[in-house]
Amino acid sequence: MSTPGTTAASTATAHLHAYLTGQRWFAGKGREFRVRSWTWPFPWLSAEGTEPSMRIELVEVEYDDGTTETYQLPMAYYAEPQEHLAHALLGEWEEPPRPPVWAYDALHDREATRYLLRGVLDERTVDGLSFHCLDGVDRSISTPSLLLTGEQSNSSLAFGEDAILKVFRRIAPGRNPDIEIHRALTDAKVEHIAELYGWIEGDWGEGQTADLAMLQQFLRTATDGWTLALTSVRDLYAEADLHADEVGGDFAGESQRLGAAVADVHLHLADLLDTAEWGADDLRATAGAMQQRLDAAVDAVPDIEQYADGLRRAFDDLVDLDHPLQVQRVHGDLHLGQALRTVLGWKLIDFEGEPAKSLGERMSLDPPLRDVAGMLRSFDYAAANLLTDHPHDAQIAYRAREWAQRNRSAFCDGYAEVSESDPREESVVMRAYETDKAIYEVVYEARNRPSWLPIPMAAVRRLAGADEHEVTA
Image (cartoon, rainbow, N blue to C red; front, side, top):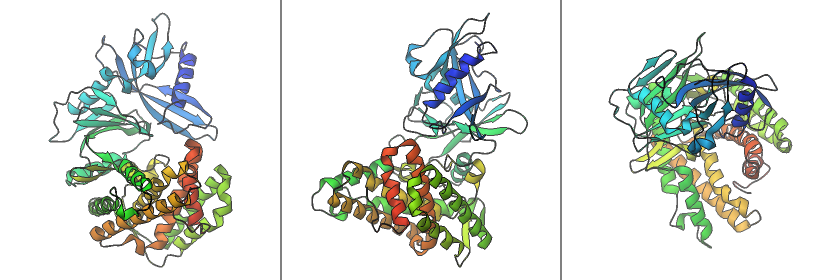
């Protein structure tokens, strides 16, 4: 089997460009880009002469502004087309005198993905690739993989009810924070996470070493917080006259327990990993970065320019904060979809940080209130999500605001009980981070889900002081 050589490169690259454009995990959707390089620095993981031929390949793309990104693309090659993998076909090409090959995204192929699972469980080491497995992990796992849907920046494979392998699609040299944080919390036996089982690391020379995937406990019977919250909101909308605390599906108790779980994880992270204290210079730098993101957002979504002055006040107030701020490692991208409700309580997942940020930014220290602000924004999102179908219904809008306020308050109550620090007492910091998050959401929705744009725009108006309502469509 062969990937394209010189004679097939143009055809293969065209297929690859088209495939990337259609993938949820590709961050360049909506931007002009070219495939700058397509390399295969790692050896075949499959045995010689077997099908599929499988290996991990790397694709570097370049955008019009000169920035580049590297994506991981495990590939499976066959001598004949595979009908059951038609949805994952990159293309067919040949390199005379060799026969043609059919190339597929290997993560859709159960025969190919078993090489990744066995590599971790057997702790294989091949040229450029090292597989790691923690002590105590069941090494007999052999269930075929199922590629999960719904993820936006990575690809996850479920192996029965035993384990889940998250494959990082966009990679950068260095330790992935998802692995670093999960290992620290797993070793400390923290209850509010899914345990880490192992990981895959790649080294393709000249200091280019990166984490490629992580294997962890699969919480198969869990339900994510976003789904539970939406169910609660629907129950509220279905009632004509009841308040949020009177509906059978009231979510406030879960919100309070979730706040307690987040606080517990924060306390462990402060104990296990680096901490520091931000003074005036750090606050000025942080507020400056927030200002820059606002400026970039105004260029990308001109509709928010009318609110820019009000939004900047939140960042100016952060500069003027009259006391130091404790910072540490945090989740970095916390929202209801990153929390799973299990029979044993809430579990937090995906400590990778915001996908759009660089690895250095995702590894940096932040106040725990950044995570709190992210979760509060998520409650607003859940409340307003269904309002897009009722844009002029004042009664439903009122009920959405009530639901959001009740659950935001309950979350802060739970967080304060465990951390002994009430987030609401740090209103300046909370407003700055909520504002920064809302600005990020505006740009994201404008690029990916324009029909959802009214949700963060409502938050922008409120945070800028232009709208007294918490949640509105």
